[in-house]
Structure formats: C-alpha cells, structure tokens
Amino acid sequence: MQLNFLKAKIHRATVTQAELHYEGSCAIDGRLLDLSGIREYEQIHIYNVSNGERFVTYAIRADEGSGTISINGAAAHKAQPGDIIIICAYAQIDAAAAIDFRPTLVYVDRNNLLTHINHSIPRQAA
Image (cartoon, rainbow, N blue to C red; front, side, top):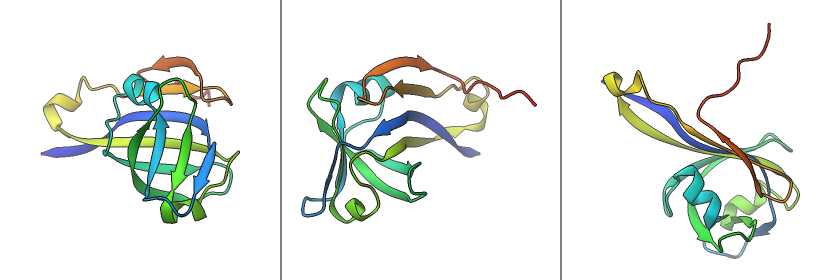
C-alpha cells in the first residue's frame, strides 16, 4: 500500500512578487529548495495564510539567497506581495517505509531567510 505523506514544507514564507503575465509556477529561492528537498518542476501545494486560498502549482528555482517567493501566472490572483504562505510537497511512500519517515520542515523569517529546520511538528499542549 502507498500512502501520501508530507515530504517537505517551507513554513510561513512571505510572497515577494505576483506576476500574472508570467508562465505559471512559483519561483522559490534556490537555497530554500535545496534545504527543503523540493525539486524544480515538482508539484507543490500552497496554502495562503493571509487570505485562505489554497492552490497547486509547481516549483521553479529563483536565485540562491534572493529570498524570492514569486507566485506566477493565474495563481497570482490567489496571492499578493506580503502574503504569508506555506509551501508543501507530498510523496507517496510505502506503508512499511512510512514508519520511520520524517518530513523536512524549513522555517523562515519575514525576509524568507532560514531560521531553522525540523523533522517533526512540535505537539501543542492540550
């Protein structure tokens, strides 16, 4: 059996650009792609914390260290510069391998600079 698991997440990134008349995709700082393990042209899900929009597109590589998070094409209607988003990639994993699987969770500041990386989400107190 194959299960769908969170593979990687870039948490609370700030949208730096929205380019309506650009070929669709999301340009992401290349360093953040490398740290997260998200590959160029990989399908990504974007959750807009600022306005509640959720959409699927694919990642393209922006300059390393640029802090760029650019929402392009039709998706530019769903996010604007300054919006806070969560970028996720998922993977199908065999049920046996899923027992020990841990995602890569990349956390950034408001300038899209790395603050830390985790491999599990901290549990909230009840």
